[in-house]
Length: 159
Image 1: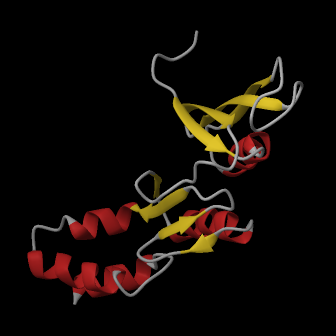
Image 2: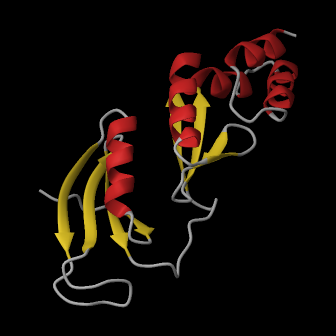
């Protein structure tokens, strides 16, 4: 049964490639049905991949090959909570190493322009520390990072 709420992500002819990458990289992800265009459309021809159904970390999504007119922005991002440095490194390196690019404070973009926040749970906990001085130290440390370094966050939190 189809979900009532599905994320629609716009691609320029690469929805199937993106869905396959996400399914291979993120847990609880898979590629579903691929729908081909029944006729020509502004961004493609009859028979081209038009829509790809996929699940990304348990979230139902469709990839729409709508053409080059719409670009992804940081106004939308996936935030992935990681449990340790190895998981943080694996996901970060998969995204950035597959044509993506680094950004500040645990943010990066994949090769299709989608923004990702690879956020260790240790960072979230540090920023919520009731000791506001400890939270501020962790925050200040985060502000100097691209990929989050959990050991550095924990050291800053301890002071």
